[in-house]
Image (cartoon, rainbow, N blue to C red):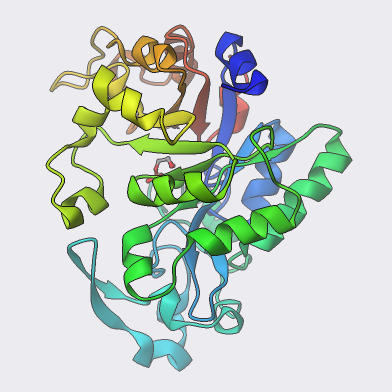
Length: 330
Ligand code: G3P
Ligand code: CA
């Protein structure tokens, strides 16, 4: 384990990772949302990454982009609408891999959840889809401006799917990060994935810290493809964590795996996951913290700070939040 990781394990205050930017305040995955998160004091910003037809990594949570852009309003792209099977689900819409970067740059972002966050719709139509390079340029410029190192926390989205259409994410991601000076296990970078095989591949190609994401249900999609019967729950056991520690330095977990909720949404006693992970020399970062009552446990309605306090006391090393300013009040 590196010095940096050991220090983080001892640190009491979890690092704050701006989930898709300051996505409580701006449409997700926009330069404006990332910049606001940095100005609020976030330690890391989180771009989810997909890829264009011409092989450029860009920030979107899905490769289907009608939920977060105005692509459906663009008559010039009407004929690009398709139905595809993505990770086993039939999805109709417009897909990044069918557009060049120049074409995608004609689109503008919009708020994903306008009913819950109507105040953010005033920004609809203003911001471009950013490339990974543009996000790195922002982070490096802002780090100099604010006088502290801002980290970047990219997630490889649908890695098996993109590999199957000859648009692999991994080599491209490493090349961009390495070219921009992010090398070695001390770099302010965490690379995350919900799949396992691409993290194992990455571990052979880079020393940058890797994060195995664990959902509270289901299984890694690559496990489904290669016939591995294990689930995320299996990976969260002592045995599973030991295996993860062979290729990753951190787990990024659904917070329900740390403090489960009952069928009424009330919080239960913490599990041993944080302690088990630390014993396996893994950091623990939990997702996703949001201010709206729709996302808060019934115990803490109108009081998101209480949820942060509770989770901080479990010993987590970091947390993903849509509201970095609220997260930083704990
Ligand atoms: O990447 C971890 C966290 O972001 C939760 O996943 O679905 O929001 O990308 P998601
Ligand atoms: Ca993510």
